[in-house]
Image 1: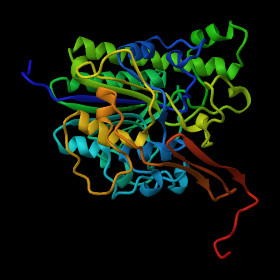
Image 2 (image 1 turned 90 degrees about the horizontal axis):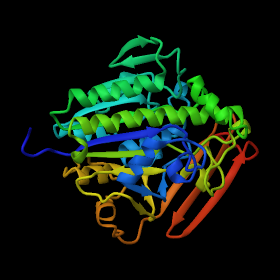
Image 3 (image 1 turned 45 degrees about the vertical axis):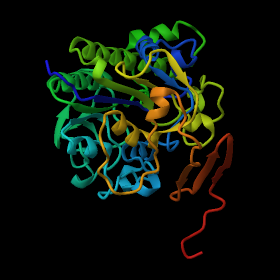
Amino acid sequence: MRASRRTNVVLIVADDLGYGDLACFGNPIVRTPNLDRLCEQGTALTQHYAASPLCAPARAALLTGRYNHRTGAVDVPSNRGLDRISPRERTIADEFQSQGYATGMVGKWHNGLHSRQHHPNAKGFREFVGFLNGGMDYYQWVLDRNGQTELFDGRYLTDVFTDEAVGFIRRHSDTPFFLYLAYNAPHAPLQAPEPLTKSYRQLGTLSEEVCCLYAMIEQMDAGIGRILDTLARLNLAEDTIVLFTSDNGPWLRGGYARHNGPFRGGKGEVYEGGIRVPAILRWPKELEPGRTLDAPIHCCDWLPTLLELAGLRRTGELPLDGIPQRRYLVHGKPIGPQPPRFWQRNRYEPIAHSNAAIREDQWKLVWPMREGADRKEPED
């Protein structure tokens, strides 16, 4: 065993998981015992904000520490390249890799599809297995492993991603590592192991969509339990930061309507329900267990914060929008006045619609959703 270990990081991101989709954040129905355990052993962040109410832009901001509009990822359509992170951007994986870390990504990328310069292997991830666009069938999946195609083998996709994450941790247990595990659960298509879906269906109070969605969350939770157990068995838990969050709020239309905490709105909207998402941070070496922190934290903060927690200095030169939050997370002392935070969801084709918000201190201004009527052609 090494005399001194560098800090490992496991960043786990769920897909379209809302503030009210976890038992430890107040859901009385869904079963998430392992995320509950993570919460008991770590810190729950009750005012954690995604950078966007949509997948690709939110992920770009998380990975770069910069507002998504700066990165080039302004929307979700991969076929038009609107989800791409610009080649000039330096990701958190670039930072860790340049300082001797093994870097791996497992799961949903959704930040560039058509060019090798936008592939995860070109954005700091030495190892990648997952898919590049915004969605994938959970049973008949097609994955990319470092540029090579792999076809479905009968396993449920969430379990595949868990298997790959566990394998990465085991392979690099003797070296410092940064792992980005981006589950696509509980994003559509709604597909889950039938026994779990049936157990929620038997309650008789939920739509079929929500029964399946909660089953998807429960299966993801089981995978997270395997990851936590792997860290413990390898004697890595003490030296490993585990951060769990979601990319944006939940889709709530039609049969998807469900508990989303006390918040208005959901995916696609800059109301709290679309951008305030659960976050749990565990680091036994430095953080006291069972805490709740209530000051706002933005997902752009994680790049400088995780580097600071790991004792590393950022080497990128582009200005960040995120601010390091170590003092607050470790000592519970806010860093002082927070900068204003901005959100904008916009699309121009085929139908123009957008909404935006700014929050400063306890005040938030929302420019509500506007669709179609105000669209102007470029020459106008």
